[in-house]
Image (cartoon, rainbow, N blue to C red):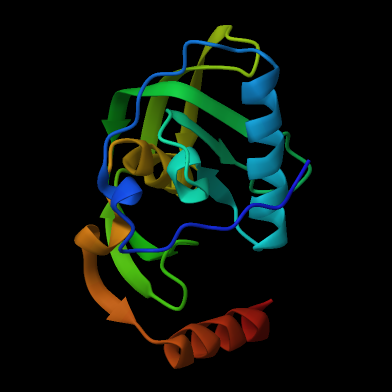
Length: 166
C-alpha cells in the first residue's frame, strides 16, 4: 500500500466521467488499498479514483464510527429522497468549504471489491458523502454545487458552538 498524491482542481481528470471497472483483480485491489490509505492520511471520509489520477468508477466512503468502509465500484444511484443543505469540503479543493444542497436519502446499486453486486440505502451525512463521491465519478465537482462559500473562521466558530452544546 502507498499514499498517493491527491489530484487537485483544476486538473482535467477531475471533470471527466470515469470508465466502468471491468477487472476486479490484484491491480484494482492495490489501487483501492492505496486510495484508502491516501484518504486516511488526508483526514478525509471519502475519495474517488480520479482524485488519485485514475479515471475509473471506484470510490470509498468511510465515516469511521466502527463501520466498515463502503466500496463503491460502478455505483449507480437508484433513488433519492428529501433534501438537505450542509457544509462540504473536498480533498481536491484544499481550503474550500461551502453549503451544498443534496438529497437526504439515497439508494445505490454498486459492486464490492470482489465484483459482487449489492444495494445500499443511506441517509443524512452518509448519503451526502456517497453522492459527493459518485459525482466525482461522473466528472461533477462540488464547487459547481456550492450555494454559499463558508470561510474557515465560520467553520471554527461552528465547531466551537458544537463542542459547547455537547
